[in-house]
Image (cartoon, rainbow, N blue to C red; front, side, top):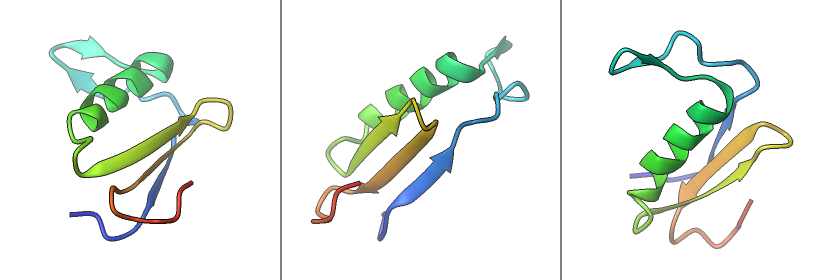
Length: 66
């Protein structure tokens, strides 16, 4: 369970991430994360700032938004 917000910097390509023998980097890495995060949308909220290359994640019941 999340108790605070988390910030992930996605400025570096995830070239070392291997899933099903496919390589994910840049936009496809963000798409993968977005898919994973959306499966938990009953517990968390998130915002992807592609321009700043940052992903914010916070508990659904948290009042402050990012």
